[in-house]
Length: 280
Image (cartoon, rainbow, N blue to C red; front, side, top):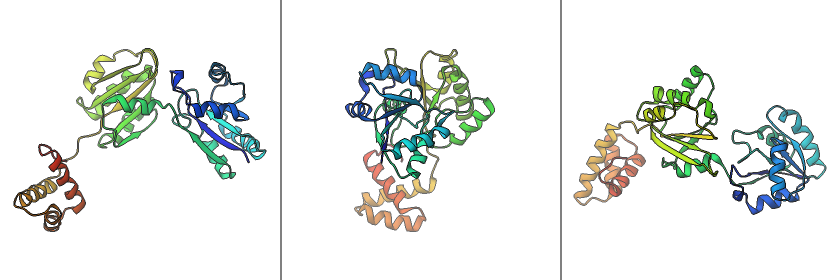
């Protein structure tokens, strides 16, 4: 039984390929590539001579059956995209589903990812984020798309073409507000890598023309909505603690009386202890 490997490749800097990825690409029987001409340059750079076949959004459904037959014959296959991690706004989902249904093993070979590279250096919260791929191209659909994420508190990560970036930023300002934090990461890991950071209104003024290069857009989450009941309960817990009552006892008593979540109140009290000038 053959194995399908999902191999991440560099998004710009070729030094970002892993030793494991190189080993897998050398040992498999086939490399399924989004663009075989593009991938041939990568393979030649690392002196890898391998049979390749194309797998892209237009032929994936038809090609999946053929690849499953190769796996049935005991041949191993590596799936790569033009750059970065397969399946993340790239082909591969249909193939993976078909391979799993056929009973074959699917093994990820992690590596470079534009969305994670951008998130790491953006300066926005990383504990919770949502990746939504490419937004719709037309304005009405794009604004409806942004409306869905307007009140969510996670960092939103998007891919966008340089040509549509000014229109996207204008819609972010309209739907999410002029002060919504925005980061535009451009040409990640390449020679002219750059990060622009600022509020949506400033982003609109800055990017009046499409910038060159590949783009990742990150949008800060919505501010936490006011919670008057929880804040009032927190004040009582803080006062009880100042009088010598243990935190757990104070939370249990106040949560019951105020009819708020004990877990939410306990977490808020812990955060208040660590950061007394803020409210969670």
